[in-house]
Figure 1: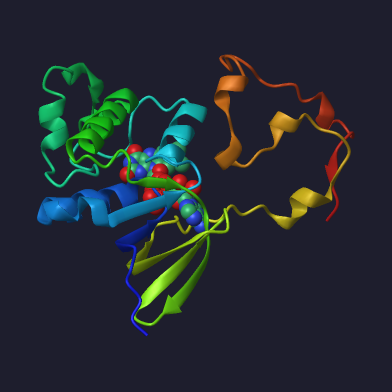
Figure 2: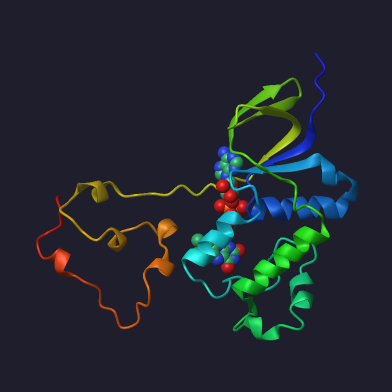
Length: 205
Ligand SMILES: Cc1cc2nc3c(=O)[nH]c(=O)nc-3n(C[C@H](O)[C@H](O)[C@H](O)COP(=O)(O)OP(=O)(O)OC[C@H]3O[C@@H](n4cnc5c(N)ncnc54)[C@H](O)[C@@H]3O)c2cc1C
């Protein structure tokens, strides 16, 4: 049975890896724009990246200015020519806002702003020589090729956490993935309220 694919390439996830792949593909094949779709529950590029940098109030990247999603490694440096104060020592680490604006400009330049479908993919099945992707709204789509860019990181919570007895402030023990510094106010000079440690909460071995 011949099945005509709806799209050529489906990318599951719309994080920085998905965007990098998309821009590199389009650099090589400009005509592919309408045949690539990314799928992400957020419906937009880099939502996870922006969320984490905002929640942890990170002022600049830890990677130098040549590491970014656009195909030309020096693009970000050129983009920053009028914003050199946003390249931080020791290796010209891009400021968070600079990086965000650069990615936004790259998304506009390659015209991929509308290439993210707001959906979680919860099923993937081979279909002749293609794949059928199941979307969380119940619909499906057929793609010639599928790239999983869902980030392999799985949050690990040690077993002993569930064994802690007693009450403790909910913001005193969170996984770094969920740590939102914006809700904590200034921590400068704050030794923390340790009263809950004095016997109210303990870990049984
Ligand atoms: C605090 C912090 C600082 C960092 N600083 C840097 C830095 O300076 N430089 C650097 O290079 N890296 C940095 N990183 C690492 C960087 O954030 C990750 O390497 C990067 O986000 C991984 O990109 P990704 O595209 O693989 O995954 P993600 O950015 O996590 O994107 C994966 C996407 O897949 C989606 N998804 C998952 N499952 C499905 C599904 N079933 N269907 C549809 N969509 C799905 C998710 O919603 C998500 O949007 C930092 C990370 C942290 C936590």
